[in-house]
Image (cartoon, rainbow, N blue to C red; front, side, top):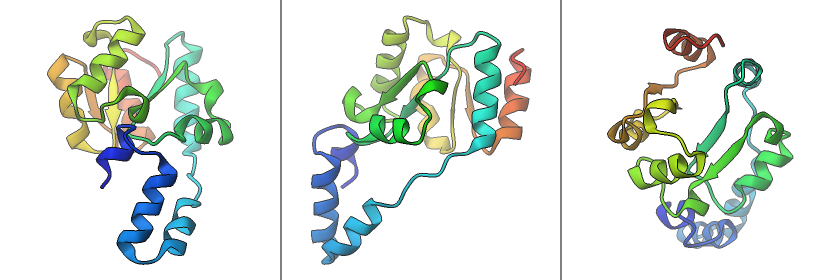
Length: 153
């Protein structure tokens, strides 16, 4: 049920409708769909420090057709050079094609792109292409992983 919405086959609105029908409770699905995202401000501090050191930053998310608007509404757009949305790419993590599309758009080799995700299963596609990866478990742990790579965050 998730794959069509995160690969852009159906819109978020249609997907929420489908969830409501599946649950037999359209109202609950609509209310759930309105639940706002929360910003991890400690991560934004890490991102700001990375950008301040001259590194480019990007998001790759398994999202819906509304991700860009959501990122913008949260005030996060200025912190990232790119927002890569699986619904626009046509492929979702961990599919290596999603990562390849990101590399193509960044015009960088895999070895020069660091990828972190809170779901270990999502790292496989990046690793298959040769990207350094990290299982995200919080900003402090990420800072340590970045320091190992020579990036002060």
